[in-house]
Amino acid sequence: MRRRLRDFELDVVFQAGDEPLAVLGPSGSGKTMLLRAIAGLERPDAGKISLNGRAVYDSSRRLRVPTRERRIGMLFQNFSLFPHKTARENIAFGLPGLSAEERERRIADAAQKVHVSGLESRFPRELSGGEQQRVALARALAIHPEALLLDEALTGLDTHLRNQIEHQLEETFASFGRPVLFVTHNMEEAYRLCRRMIVLVGGRVAASGATEEIFRHPPTVEVARLTGCKNFSRVRVVSETVVEALDWNVTLTVPRISAAPPKFVGIRAHHIRFVEAGGDARAENNVFPCRLARSSETPFRITLFLQTETAGASDSEFQLQAEVFKEKWERFKSIPPPWHVLLSPESLLLFPD
Image 1 (cartoon, one colour):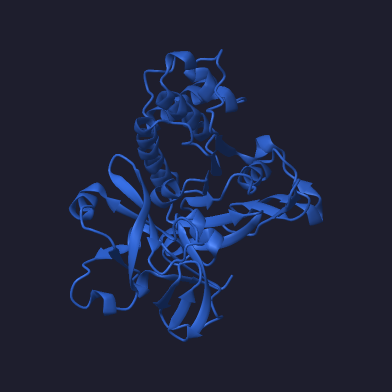
Image 2: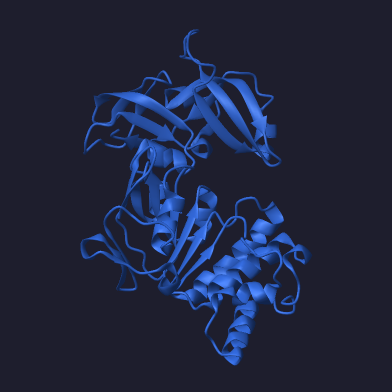
């Protein structure tokens, strides 16, 4: 489907099977518009949208099934509960036209699935953030949807609530058995909750496939950055197995170059290894002396901003970011510089653009 946005055109083609599909992308990449178009809240400019083999939008046939007839459950970042309605009334919102008996059965079933049974008479203000999100999920499930769309459903929750809701979503996804689109800009959420993923960049699908494979072998610099890679350098190809990393001021042994010549090389921060300087370490491939420019701590890890000793005075403050657990940092931080880092060839990522 295609839809013209202010800064670019959303133009995507993909299929979602019966297992959760993550839609990863930065803010403003078209993720929310994609969900709204599938749900029927926005009209595409052209293309086709099908749910379980049933076309709900087809510009060539001038077909557009109304939102209420698409039977799509949606879960939003801000819960979108009606504050003046009880949990029961919120869950029942999408169930008009059913008998009282069937409506109550669905409410009870949805509440039980997301573990909010017993809270049905409470108003949203009387519920915790996690309980509100579970009620919103129950409302989405109560209509027996043909697809489930989640738009940044974990954003804004504290760590404890996020873990609770992630566990709930894992349970829901495992039993749902129909298409699920999980939109997020958080790579860790995408990795934990979905085995398959598409990466949306500027309205286009930049990568598609198994989530683990995209993390291991991102096809472009932008996809690598979205999946957490922090170190990139322009390269000049020296031979089939050697490149010069221009921004790191080092020459690297790399896996044999068999496709298009790479223009960039990357390495994830946690793949940079610190090695002993004695013996033959300096003679090993891809081992370089470096000094600490600055550091940044989190409760359990530390990010080290490193400057290679081959860098000139006019170079940037640092060339590489390495991440280590604090226990390892405590072991080697007292060693006099320069330290030596290994950029293992099998950890290097090569990009054609």
